[in-house]
Image (cartoon, rainbow, N blue to C red; front, side, top):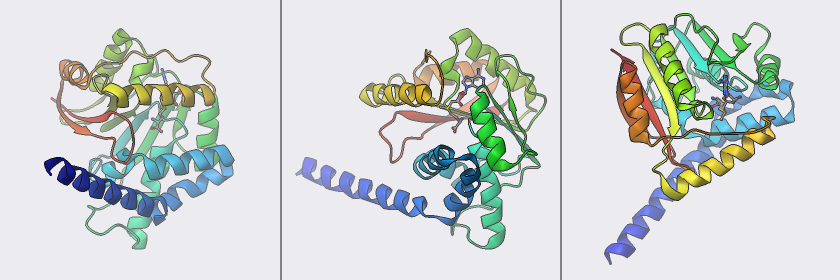
Length: 256
Ligand SMILES: C[S@@+](CC[C@H](N)C(=O)[O-])C[C@H]1O[C@@H](n2cnc3c(N)ncnc32)[C@H](O)[C@@H]1O
């Protein structure tokens, strides 16, 4: 009976997640954030729609108010600039009265900069968000970060060696003031089958997006937490795979 009860409640849980995701898929927020990508082509538009409606991290950043009060935001490995578009859309929805009930106010950053390695992604970002968007082409292992109040790194650091990961995180810490924010999403290498599935999807998507080869350098969530702490952050971890088959974790770091 205990098993039947657990199975029933987990299937109710799953169907709640599915109906929430389906509502999100058609939400004004997702529509607004994806609309600009029509100018960047079908691939860019469909990619934006899939990611912004299905990846729980975008919703979590707003629903939990993680970026509230952060004047300058820097998105490292920003791809086609989805975070910048998401934050613009959030403000428009908030001001236009189509903001989800119960969520904290939308963040109002003065700037959202992005750095991305792949020229094609930068071009898609600029085509969608306009030439004035602050998305630049560069390698985060060497590009200057300047100073900022929050750094967001979603699914990027595992593409570089462990030493390079450490150096990037140290430079991120140096770019932030005390209590500055780091949002780092990683895959948990201790996540078993779910982790292996996410690695497989990751490689496929990256090859599809034009990377010639994809070598990854992964760590368990515990090991990621440890190096983030070593680099001068207080860290909390939050599972970030709701509605997906991945083993992702969001590390929320505050600079000490
Ligand atoms: C899985 S995608 C995630 C994109 C984006 N963060 C998002 O969540 O939509 C990883 C991105 O990191 C970029 N990337 C990988 N290594 C990089 C590096 N050394 N410098 C800058 N960008 C890099 C890739 O080109 C790719 O766009």
